[in-house]
Amino acid sequence: MSVITWTLESQHLVGSTTVTVLLPDRPREEAPRDYYAAGQEFKVVWLLHGTFGDHLDWLRRTNIDLYAAEKGVAVVMPSALNSNYSNWPDFSLGYDMFSFVTEELMPLVHGWLPVSNRREDNFIAGLSMGGRGTIKFATSRPELFAAAAALSASPVEYDRVLTEDLLANGTGMFAERMRGMVANAGGLDTFLNSDENVWRSLDEKAAAGVLPRLFFACGTEDALVAPELRAFETHASQLGLDAEFWFAPGYRHEWRFWDLAIQRALEFFGLENNPSNPF
Image 1 (tube, helix red, strand yellow):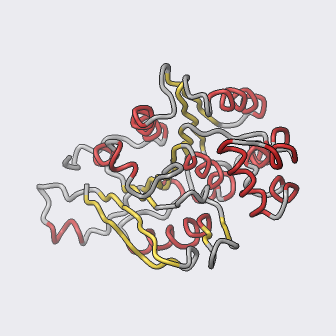
Image 2: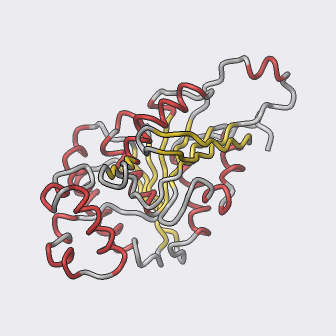
């Protein structure tokens, strides 16, 4: 795969950011002049990192370049800090990560690189925080993606678990993150009625037939996510949601699992091996 490290000034992030892009290599039997002028339109996987991560996480810690080469697809990996892939208008001069992806990065990639902008050729996946972001993009902008894969992430029934007491007195990363998210939204009621509440969004859109196909994957020993995802699996069945669930025995919240899970996600997307691509 060709690896592009792309640093650009972003309108929505109000500063510079870095994105890594993987593009299929030229087949060795094809002349460069012919191949690069052919107007390729590769399918695209938008791949999101987790908390504490950046645009290099997937490339450093998994074999995503090999898997993408086998499938002949492009992969786009942005840096998102710990933004939860949300808009943060009150952070410094603004840091609107959700809008950056949908209103800036996607037009940039679709307009400047040899990739397809058709919904049926675009897929999104992510791990942990990136998995939650994946669900949010899939439910808020379903017209952009054919399928989505949330790895080690689950919708949470915030209407039930997110209480004023938890926000005031809760400890740990979940409570700290939720205090920031709720404050950013302008209060608990506003948060619960926003696109951040993906459990409610899925309830509202499941029957409409507008959502991408959804894949959820988690290790059985992932104490952070597995109980929530089991509960959501039951709820999804009751909703009749078009979703597939995979629980991998013995795995926790770890890169060994995510390397396996992204392979399953690419298969779920329907991406077939392309023997003409060298790897």
